[in-house]
Length: 268
Image (cartoon, rainbow, N blue to C red; front, side, top):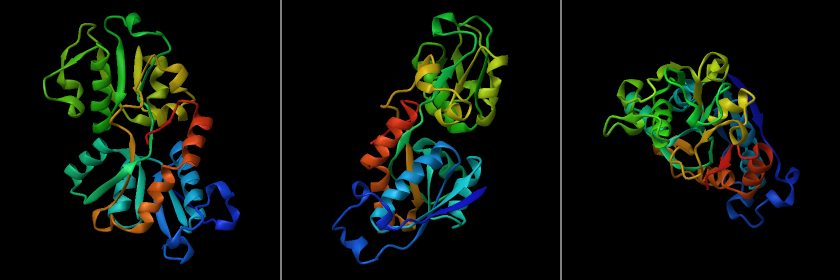
């Protein structure tokens, strides 16, 4: 886990990012907060949100993690004050399995789940018996299977939806073979499989462009947009309201559009 602090004076922020007349900012009401996120694009987007927040009088320390599992643990242990890295189904699964008392405050961005291959370029080219790698974490595994079902590649058992595993595939006309792999290794699996279903953040880290390289891709209507999460007993803190507003700012929207060119999209 890497830690770095991003504490910016309002004077250092361009006027476009400064909310003049913000009463709470002008009275120094906000306490510094620690935001947990994943390294890479998640952290890059967090930095822009933190700059916007700094322009409104809130200092944000960004704490970077290298894998999904530790971020919610850190929030629960009060090592951080909030996190922004997961979608709501992932959060709900973590709450159910771990007993966390967390609240999702609002949406940030969507890392579209996509289907990638070095061997084929469309679902019509899928061959019988192909090996398919899927994300191993439960929320993204179900999400991947739903994406395949929505595109007519498989059919899941009734009622399974986003909670499905590879054992819940009901109809599999191409007799595909499914292998669950840690998300960090999905991109590396491509030379050895027919195709892989990869989350947008890990696709970017694997030098893939979801907008260009995926032959199936989630769109902006997906229910799997990332959210800002906090401990439930602190959900009404003004710092978190301001941080969410900063994530949902025009500055973040412009950065995501210009930097990622469709590989990541604003979800607000």
